[in-house]
Length: 604
Ligand code: ADP
Image (cartoon, rainbow, N blue to C red; front, side):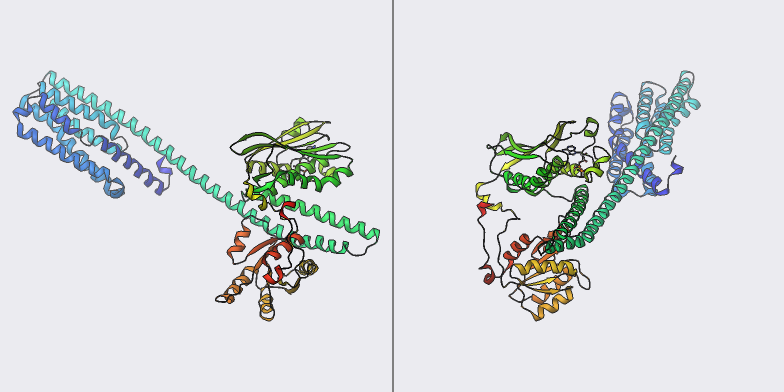
């Protein structure tokens, strides 16, 4: 088996065998010392040969010290060629000494009590070595030979009668110990090979895991880039359609454009779902814990879906348990996303029926509330068969669903993963023809009272007038630029447009600018490079122009990257006029901020 392995592996196995040898020899390093003391005490050797006996004991002690020291420093001493040689020498010297004791006693005292005791001790040591020396076959065999053969030869050559017969017994013993040693040796190496194979497999698995992680990262980046590429023009289409919809149109034009807009929005939703799913798969989604109002979230979901629910002759309603604290800690955006998915499905699969949302307190401990959130409908229901895989990605109850109702089959998979990220579980209870109830339980902490003001809904308009604010817009896409310019000009902002970073730097030299809106991906000079250049120019000056990154990258962590690169804030595309105004209101200089109107936070 060893022959099949590459040289480096054989060396590694040899090293492991030697390490084991060192470890085992440590355990028996001083065994000869007590043994020789006991033998000298129960025989006449100490009185008949005091000097020689003491000499032997001292030799064993010295060899014990050397062997232990040598074995203990295995890691630092190890050198494949030399180590085993030295180990052999340190092992064979005491073995030779012990092996010579019985013949010496035989010559001086004959085959009496002392001789028998010596043979007993030697065979005892030989038995112990069958295990401790088994990792290395050669040493083991030489050791046994050195230990027992002098006695056997002495008995054969110089013994008579029963003494000669004793040699056969010792010979038998030697044979038996060699067989046993070979067995232990095989067992040891089989174990070593097994361990080695396991290690190799674990390494291969590690490598495969790293490759999968790399591939998953590449997939995530690819998806993020693709979604950026697709969303940029799509946002342009939707935004420009919005602008045209605000102009004078006849009935037909209005209807066509509304169709364009709704198709664009559907496409955007699908892209967002795919991106979201891949982000969850890549573990790139983080759940926030901020103060929020459960009622506001549910209200918002119902408000946005009321029209489509009623257009399918459904009643839609919601209830909030009055015992639930008004403000809880959690992730309102992700909660909204889950509820929008579930309620959107309920609306899609229900006609002439009822849809209801509820949030109910089911437990409370140390200001933590167990809350069950439910979305019920009286729609077509889901068959028991389909229920089994309904939370799997791309799974739909039956093949005709996509044709009839659209959808990607990702909504429930995303919802389930998001609920799990919030440490909750989602369940489904459904009867075909009667309806479905999706429920999930969350454990949410009550927010501190003073944080009520912190629950500003980002979508709520706090800023309406930015008259006089001078904004430099660095954006290569002309449709997006036109759209942003329109949105900004409506709030009284003066816009200077630059098509890339280089133009932006030129514009900064020739104009007074209050805030820069900086697209990250631009030709010639991208947003990060331009920001670095601006920050370099500003070094040592008192004034630092706020830079707000504009990007279609919706990945978590991208915001931090933008801030790291010297930007001050971050807006994702499609640009939402309210968010854009709120953000600019924050960065506008005091002269402009005086006209910024703040809304009452309690009305949120
Ligand atoms: P999508 O709705 O995009 O197809 P989902 O993962 O949200 O994907 O839903 C998967 C499938 O589960 C749907 O296609 C539908 O067959 C079934 N389904 C989900 N919610 C309901 C519901 N409330 N009533 C009936 N069927 C449902």
